[in-house]
Amino acid sequence: MSISRGPFTGRTLAGLARDLRTGRTTSTELVEQALDAIAELDPALNAFVTVDAEGARAAARRADQEPDDLRGPLHGVPVAVKDLIMVAGLPSTMGSRHFADYVPEVDAWCVARLRRAGAVIVGKTTTHEFAYGPTGDRSAAGPSRNPWDPARMSGGSSGGSAVAVAAGMVPLALGTDTGGSVRIPAALCGVAGFKPAYEAIPADGVFPLSRSLDHVGVLAGDEHDCLTAYRCLTTSESEGDGAADPAGAGPVRVGWLDPAGLFACDPRVV
Image (cartoon, rainbow, N blue to C red; front, side, top):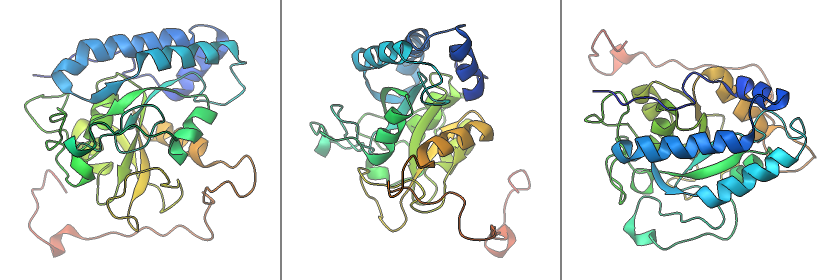
């Protein structure tokens, strides 16, 4: 049995930015919609381990007082952050009881970028413990559950981020991907997930699983929103700010691994 969807289902970042710019809505209204959806839907889905209602409301008020075109397409938009990406003042448990009381004092690089883009962080999302698993069902906070059928797994390790977007609680969430941790839950929950090039989004302030393989990624309703978020996270406002050049240094190369060379796959998969 699927769960009813929240207010951001089918709404794009471009559409939200347009509504904010034209006065059809405010950041305060969007944040209240997100908080109401979390309160209604999350008891069944467990996408969030921490909800920062007070901080989100304060950030939304600030966003509403600024020119709505000042910071770009994420200005005033509620977003969620995986619980092994540091957000100053909020617990970062990494999905483990070992870090139950850990509260970082400094934002991760990608979180600072979100704030600079005007995004409003509403909370931290459930992660497979230490990001070490593809299922999303091994966390001190309990498993994140698939909104299409809560009896089934969300995938991991960025399961909470995928669930939050798929259920329409937020339009955008940050995740991390070392061996599939954005792509797997995105596929299982029916949203778009993007793992960018290595270090395109610096992983400073992200709990490491394998530093040489860890990537910060994004989860959203479709590929256009992933691209919008990626550009906000990587476009340089000044030289030497730490972001890799998203344009790359040469032609794009795409690798393809033939599944037939590994094992027999169900035709419905390939």
